[in-house]
Length: 163
Image (cartoon, rainbow, N blue to C red; front, side):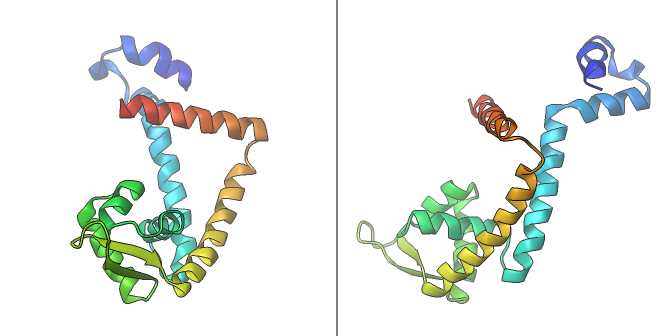
């Protein structure tokens, strides 16, 4: 399949490709493979987080709060890669469940410093244990050397797209 993408796709005009060759070319794209992998991973993580009544983004916010206590919604939004407006909605839901508390920040009275509650820490720890099992299933598909290589390749891909 990579041969089709490497040899035929760049030289063959799309209108002359058969549907099956075009499909093979699309399936061999890095963007397609990464997107498909991401979709499967998000679905698996979503499934394990249902038991904790968390979405993947809420879980990510709790993880980031563990490492960055006192962060504002805007800071968390950057760490989790969502809009500040979305993070505000997420924080309101987590606060409503008593998983986080928000108090005016010392630096700026309009910003709210967010921290995990004891309940939030317990939920985050249990959810993280469940998500780490998904991580281990993924890692088991590779040797340790391949895991390191995959990490490096994904970092390079992210860097290439971010620049």
